[in-house]
Amino acid sequence: MNYRDEDATGTDQSENLETLEPELHEALTNFKLSVDAWSDAMMSRPRAVMAPSRTNWSAVTKWALGCAVFAGTVSGGVYQNHRQVEAARAEAARVAEQQQHREMAAAQVLKENEEDLMANVDSDVAREVPSALEPLATLMTEDDTKGN
Amino acid sequence: MIKVTAEEIAAQEFESVVSSHRTQIFRFLLASTRDVDLAETLTQDCFLKAHRNWSNFRGESSALTWLMRIAINLQKDHWRNRRMQFWRHTRTNAVDLDEASDWLPSGERTVEQRMLAREQVAQVWRSVENLSERQRTVFLLRFVDELELKEIAAATGMGEGTVKAHLSRALARVRKEFGAKR
Image 1 (cartoon, rainbow over the protein chains, first blue to last red):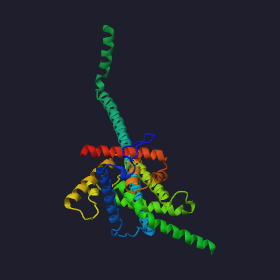
Image 2: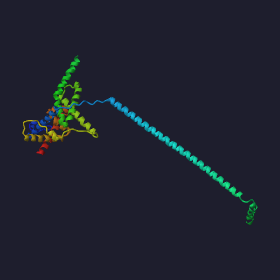
Image 3: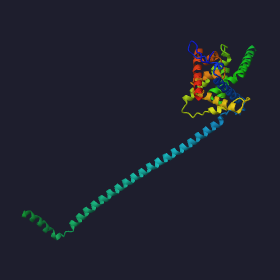
Image 4: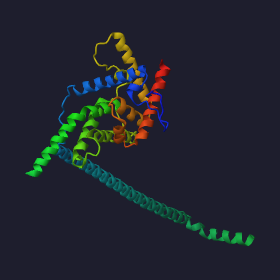
């Protein structure tokens, strides 16, 4: 059979190595020999045997427990610190508010004292007018009324 | 007692199948992947799978074609999984074509003959690289493992006509690239 013959289905009948052209035949033979040589060499090579790694569950448990304790400690400390900061902030705000109230009360007292003082000054000034001039003062008021 | 004996016989049979066909299965997988470690792993997986299903093997096909079918499916699964996991860091140990071509049987050849043979082998590797997956499988089963068309059909699950067509196209391509090189 010629390697280029085709059967009734139209397929090439070149599946036999012997029917191929000499050059391709030689190349495919060399290819097979090469793969055989490679495969044989790899199958007979010495291999390093490695023990399968086993999971050390007790070590894993210890690590997990240690990590959990560490995380708990750290988060507890952080939470405690946060609470202290919040409490200090609230205390400072309360003290500031009290201070503000005290200052406002003091200012109020000061204002009231000032008003009293002015009232006293007014009355004192009024009393300082000599009593001998009081009738004249009354007259001057009446004359002014009449002049209008 | 009878059951133990039957199991022992089955184990002996399987052992003999392994020793008879291990070389061929490994050679096919090595030629398909050009990766020694992967070929070894897939060969082991193939025989492991075969061992698990040995009791279901009815001998309708030969043990070799049955094993070859398992090996082809394992290889397909491997590449499919790799494609699916493309985002993962995957490592390939496949040797390049020149390195694969270095393997030549130590016969009584001259240096020139060896160089020519090496060049021919490299050219065939390059052609095989460019074949489709099916064409490559059929080509390697035929010209490396020297299976008959009927056996290739049984191993690949294709019809004999389909096998012929794939082989014909594969050979045409190899021939064309070989001719272009000359």
